[in-house]
Length: 319
Image (cartoon, rainbow, N blue to C red):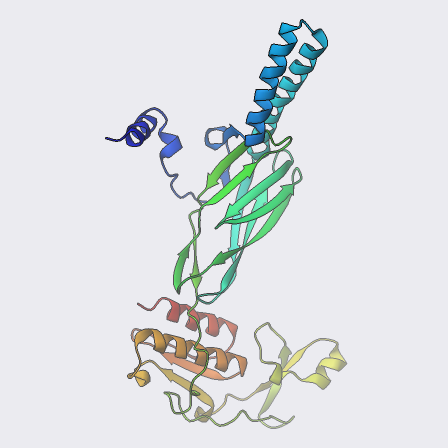
């Protein structure tokens, strides 16, 4: 057994928490004293060496003023160690909120920290070699946005988060690891370019009709996020000072985009997924109704933001 392996085994026996990877934890996560580690920084080691030299010189020359200064600086050094510890102690990670991203894009995630007892200054969060500096006042909450790299579609486990602080004087570094138990779904990347749905597995689809007032007209309703701008009734919206959408009778079968997995037999699975993702995005952007037929399930026919996310989630989870 090598010297390094022997030292590691001895540390594992005497201090298992130093080498054992912390398991994933459910939210909220609070930083307590048993999970915060404090070590001197490079500047702190040099400062300590200087104090030793000052102490030896003061004792050698019996200089009370130099001895008093050395003691004051030593007290400041001890306070710096305690301050770095308190900068992390009691901080809570309350919630994590993730957005949507396709494979290869950056995924925006918001971390919600709270300080239930006191303020926390000089904090630094390390995520995937990226540094985020922040502070939080007492009895407040802070949403910290971070970006995660997405390599492929499917579930992405949240990475380990390293919190540290060198507050107040930079003499000591206190750090702790957070491993939240959570994951986010990464959508498949869309095909950059390719044939339209017509002739590649969709039903015959004419260009969207422009509905004049009175033609298949069924009323108005309030605008909702994800609705097509083509359906906005601008004149009625101006009169009512709010966005309103025209409601029409259900479109006939000719307006349905039928996106079939089995219609793309000449392509490999990943290319099929990327092409279907592009078609779903085009249908959503164009305000069309569509049905997505996959090997194990069929979604729709429907339209709107909820149907879009359901289809993209199903494509992301395909084997």
